[in-house]
Image 1 (tube, rainbow, N blue to C red):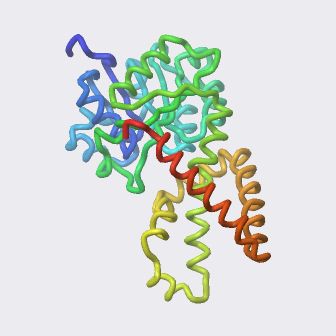
Image 2: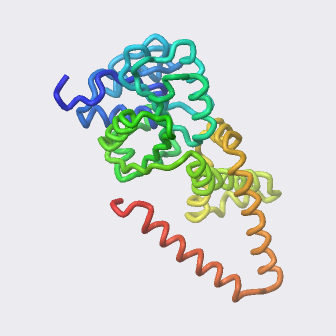
Image 3: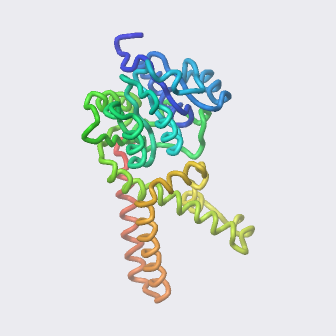
Length: 296
């Protein structure tokens, strides 16, 4: 272990795309000592060892949690809550615990309930990065470079724990944004959760069309771009959608209303209004591309 070591013993629960990429990135940065992977799939954990992401593996979090410096819960959102309940019997006294979940309110409420006094060491996080592929085979040490990582601590979170987690993510090449959990869930509903639902809905709509087979032959780049996220893990996105349903249902209803507005413009031959909306939308798309990450 060298003087640059920030985390002596790191436990990564869920060594898939996000957890595996984080382990690889921190290994490359030289700021971790031992990395232990936790998961249910021995085959995936064996692959993670072969890839150099982790040093050893455990099937049970409770077996490796007590003397960990940091625990990263990098599983789907429902499973994060299950692991927090697993820790509730004996919350680690000194370990900093963080997560990568796409919904923060529910996870933070569960963490407060399960970790009790040790909730102060829980730093909620969410890296805004990903791919359609999952598992350790898809992991890359550069996944988080020039991407944002959101941290959503509250008034009870220890400032030292926040700083340690911030430094860990900075070592991956990411930028840090601090938000409260309500804002995070509302923003991610609009920028991530709703687009995933729309992509799944579009593919379902196409599959049930009477002329689906002919439509399959006529798809091109625009269709692929729009529906790309429908290749994501359905179980994971089912859980995210339900867990963030308050924000997501508001956005779905607002989007339905906007579609109705556009439908009326088309129905009434309001070409000028329709073109103006399309022009404004194109400008917004350019603005999003510019502001998404100026370093990218």
